[in-house]
Length: 71
Image (tube, rainbow, N blue to C red; front, top):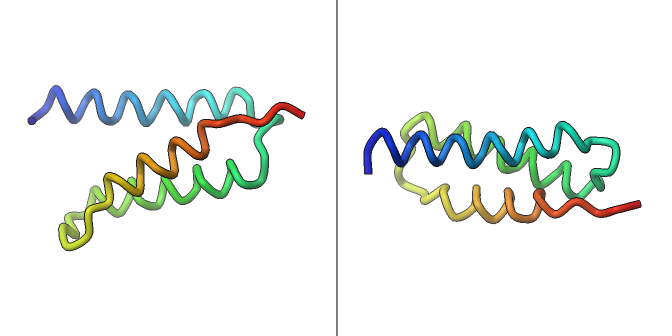
């Protein structure tokens, strides 16, 4: 879908990471693992390996990492 979809994709991903950075004291270890895994999938999607569909895994890990548990 071009540049507008790419901007929306990156803005949504950046929003989740900014929320996690602001609330890093209340992140559970599982949330940290999920956000780290999502970053790995995001990095791998930028380098053109189109054999595997990385977007569903990225959104799955972002959703799991977005859930912040209150302590």
